[in-house]
Length: 302
Image: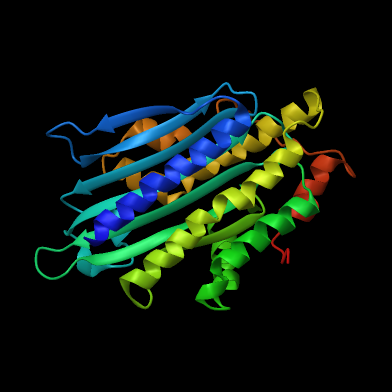
């Protein structure tokens, strides 16, 4: 069965990622297995893997979920009004890692499948996902490596995919209310179904498999760099921007909350500490100012 294949891949991907980064931290991820109770809006189950208070990660969450519901939420049908009222099955792996060290970037990755189940006719499949990097201090080497790994993951699917998905990522992970990018981007795709189920599934797998080689070398380079109170204060301020995006603009967060998803798992992406300041501007010529001036504006890193 097609959806069983997707589940098996996603379950294994979550395990590989958490094994890899738990070993790097020196502390294993804790597994929280959950099951939806009868009578809830959604039915299904999942496994949330969480690491908090580690040597490398202040918080790192990686969640697998598989849920079914009687009715697609509005965030999923805004582009397909013909499917309003259809049931659905959704499954995916989503992660956000918040390292302790301000020189180590926050990272997000998600791969997912959504099947609309109309009362009559065949299921309608969509795949989605991507990954993006949110540094607090910019390093050209890291940006180039991350984007090159994303490009290579898509190379077998056509020369158009990386530039198309990069532009989609730049557009999506943008705080419109601040006219500011969340980070340096990566790739993002949604509602994707091209050349049939198998081809679309293979593309999703390639993106998921690229996460470890995209992020681990960056984290290994930055996790032990010395830092002080100034760097920590800047990290917390920029984390505030991360919170703003997830709550105000992120479709995945909205889908989960609107459909009656598990709140604890949906909000695991939030950093454990963040801050806000009124009209704070970094010092001209500083590393903090360089992030805003040179790294966050949209550019071709390759």
